[in-house]
Amino acid sequence: MTKLGTATINGKQVSFFEPPHKDGPDFPWVDVKELAGAFLPPDAAIRMVEHAQRFGGDGERVVTVARNGDDIATIMCHAMAQGLCGFIDQQNGFVPADADDAGPVHWKYCVAAGRFAADHWPLSFEGIIHAFHHGGGHFMRGLRDD
Image (cartoon, rainbow, N blue to C red; front, side, top):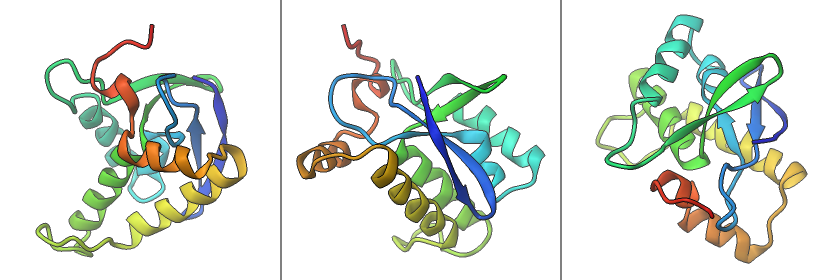
C-alpha cells in the first residue's frame, strides 16, 4: 500500500494510505497507532494497535500493514477508524455506549479524513456511495482481488 500523505488531527500527524484492495472504490486507510496517538498517550495507542490486530471474525482481515517511512504501520479502513474514534469518545465519557451520537474524537477524525480524501483521493459521487456501502472492500471480508 502506498502512503498518500498525512493530515493533522488534534495537533498530530496521521498517515493515510491507498486501500489494500482493487475491487472497487474505498476511502483511504489510516495508520492505527498514529490515529490513536492523536488522542491517547503513547502506551494506550500501542495497545489499540494490538487490539486492532485481533479484530475481525473468521476469515476477515480488518487491518493490514504498510510501510510508513522506516516503520511498518498497522492500517485500517475508514469505517474501522470511525469505530476506533467512537470507542475513544465513549471511554472518555463523551458519548454513552448506547447512544448513536458522535463525540469530538469521531468528528475531528472525520473532518480531517474528509478533507484529506478530497485533496488526495478524489472519488466520483458514485465512488463515494460505493465506498460508503463497501468500506474495506473484499479485503476485509477475506476475499482475494485476483
